[in-house]
Structure formats: structure tokens, C-alpha cells
Length: 184
Image 1 (cartoon, rainbow, N blue to C red):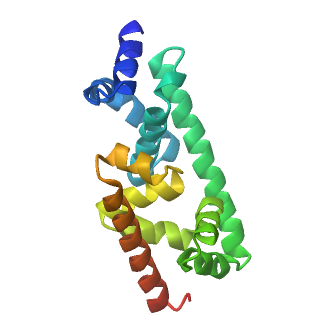
Image 2 (image 1 turned 135 degrees about the vertical axis):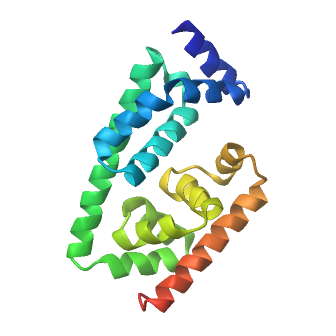
Image 3 (image 1 turned 60 degrees about the vertical axis):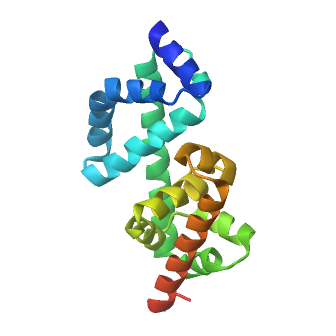
């Protein structure tokens, strides 16, 4: 446990190889838990990624066994995703998805952030999943994980301008798809 705390402290101080050591050490057991919770590989991979992103955002909050801390993050992330899916299904079944899709495609960043943060509707989630990895990951970090441009840049090891460019390219792609599918 002390070695894990030292690795987390090293990561917090900028040693990114420290987190790699932890990932390699626990990937089998943590990914296995993700598979058991989601019961399918794509959702398990998403959950696994979300779990590590959350852990990397707050490494100082690990005050007990690293493995137990990660299990807690994993289970809570899974519960959050189930809640979001239920909300999306409720909204989709009530016919409100077009309103949210329009807000997402709007240039007004407040409406866009509100729509994305409050609703992960089925259409949007499926379209974001189809984006190129460099765009999808940036969208997930910024809109779904709530990281600001600077934090995204730090996590991805990119300049802030590149993060902004990737987000704009992703939004443009999503808008075009919405127009093609007559959602807007």
C-alpha cells in the first residue's frame, strides 16, 4: 500500500510513468470487474477508461488500499452510467431528444454544455462513439468528464489550441450528421 501511495504521489508531481505502473499492475482485475458489471466488452472498455480518468483527476483522494479505491471508483462510475442511460431512455421515450440535439448543435456554449452534461441521449452517444479516437476522447474528456481545455490538454499531452481544434472538428462532424439525418 505504501508503494502505491508513493506512485500516486509521483504521478501527482508529474511523473506520468508512475500511473503506468499502477495500470499494468491492476489492469486484469479492474478490467475484469468492468466486464462483470457491464456484461459486454465495449461498455467495459468505456467504464475502464472512465474509471482511470477519474482516478487520475484526484490521485490525492486515495487514502486506503489502492485496489479498493479503484473498485469504488469503478462501481460508482458504473452506477452513474446506468443512471445516465435511464435518463436518456426516459427523454427519448418522451420525444424530447430533438430539443436536446438542437441545443447541442447550437453555437451557444451554455446550451451546448447544458445539453451534453444533462443528457447523454442515445443518438449523441452513438455518434460520439463513431468519431475518430482523437476527437472522441477529447469530447469525452471535455463534455462528459467535465475537464476544461487546460485539463484536457494536460491529460492528452497536447497544446490547448489542439484540444479546441479537435472539439470544433467533432462538433462540426456531429452537426453535419444531424443535418443529414434531419434532426435539425
